[in-house]
Image (tube, rainbow, N blue to C red; front, side, top):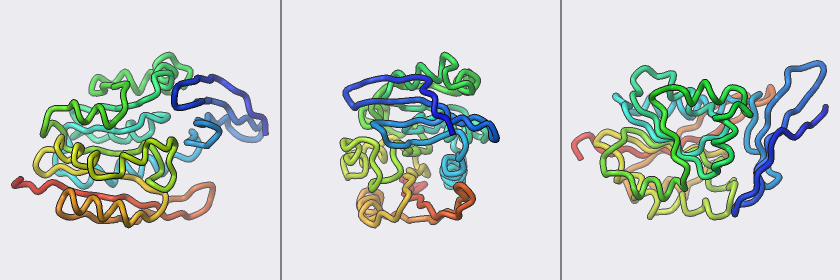
Length: 227
């Protein structure tokens, strides 16, 4: 196995690295790491796909969707595969990651971002939602970490607390939903969501990673249709 660095960037949040895993007996895999921690790659995308498909199933008419976290674009790709989606705003805090997707450093990036329904917002998701008009979206998907127990950056802890979750609720239309992906059970998150929305649920989703069956969790809260 050979690792080849493709791109590197530094920001106030630390180091972002894009590298390839090369094996003469297997296809090349693109891998994203933040501060030395594995974030995602192009080999195992089932969790991103499961997040999007399960979240889209929560809403009858997900016309306008916010995806918190661009990553390598697979959550966004699954959202765009739903013909009901008319607008998809992707909020990404790392501008260089957006550049890599746009300029082809991530080979599949330009084609994904060329979809006319996509708007990329380079910002902190907390700031972006605070500035969004009330009741402007049908679905908010939060995919910046693998849940509150697996933070990419320590400051992301605020995204699982009441002030941010109230901001997320405010941008949702009646019948809209917030979905948060987690690699493990997060009962405190469920309790906080229930406090903000009036109710919340934890859904277990089975995915296969490197031939292993794993259980991931989707934390869901909805705005009543008559709100």
